[in-house]
Image (cartoon, rainbow, N blue to C red; front, side):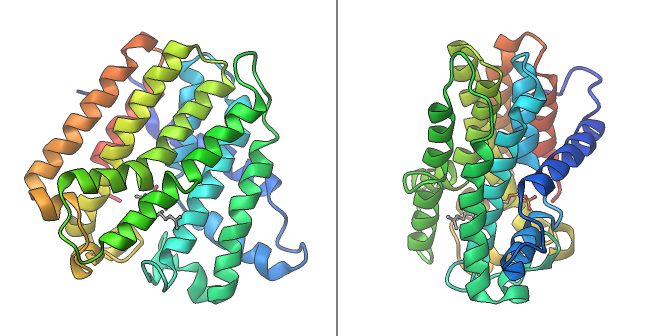
Length: 299
Ligand code: GRG
């Protein structure tokens, strides 16, 4: 398995990150907007150097469906706002209690817990305002696209995953229980990113099904790799505290099935993601390259 074409992923990521950062900068209130503290805190985490994988997947999905990336941009930015909110809240002492994220002190370490809670809340709220600026397409209304976002971010998906994660701490979970957490905590938002990219390009039902299949499997592979990196990389490489899963006796793939089998699982999931792209007949090169990159990533 490899991204068969000579697609230049580094160039794709560099240019799209720049585009997404510029759009986020425009969408969000400036640091000077009153009250300045909250806008500084929102921007601190949003521009702390995240990999922008979800926006990249959203834009790549739009391109695979023959759409214009500009039409997907508000949706790509909205997903990144939701992702960043979830990281800020996950790092809070009441949740994962982390001191570092994206290579910097976590939001609450810099702004205090109260402001960090509010910065997360504000990014979540802002995400829907940003998404609302997208254009409806003949097959997908605004309502449909916003529905995607709130479903992925809501109490049946992202939040459900976090609840199960919190409730599973210190317990011995089965692989099925762990997959339940990964599907919701990680895969749902990644899958939503590619689906929204497709919708912005007025994708057909068959294309949406293929993107869903791709996003689901890439999302699960992403989390298995995240679990592996937690035990194989240093905090400096990850930009966040490494080894936390073991220290806190969290259920992870390496803890349950071992490192070698975890790698195999991630490879198989990525192969299934690749298979889902067949229907695009060579037009999903960016998605292919991203899936391969996510499998091989080291941070
Ligand atoms: C607080 C509702 C709520 C949810 C929190 C984000 C999260 C759920 C937990 C953080 C820990 C974790 C393992 C999340 C799964 C998703 C994940 C691997 C996030 C990290 O995503 P990256 O690697 O981060 O794309 P960057 O910083 O590059 O954007």
